[in-house]
Length: 103
Ligand SMILES: [Zn+2]
Picture (tube, rainbow, N blue to C red):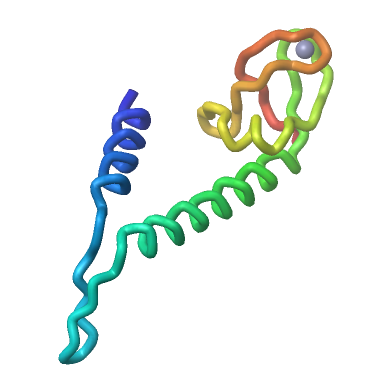
């Protein structure tokens, strides 16, 4: 719940950003909001993508059917986690729950 509230606050801040005054030595510039929001969005997407790819490179074991699988990177990037365990839907039996990484 805290994560969702933080995300909503962040989105509200990004959209409320219309322009920004930047002081560069003796001069003052008006920087449009998109010039700040765009790199932030691109950077976040790159971090999210690479984190997803990194998590998806590990093999996880379903506690129900004991079969191992590799999650998709977009599932890995969105998945809830506790320690090393992550919530995935097992592609073999369809059970959704915490899966441990294969050592
Ligand atoms: Zn399973």
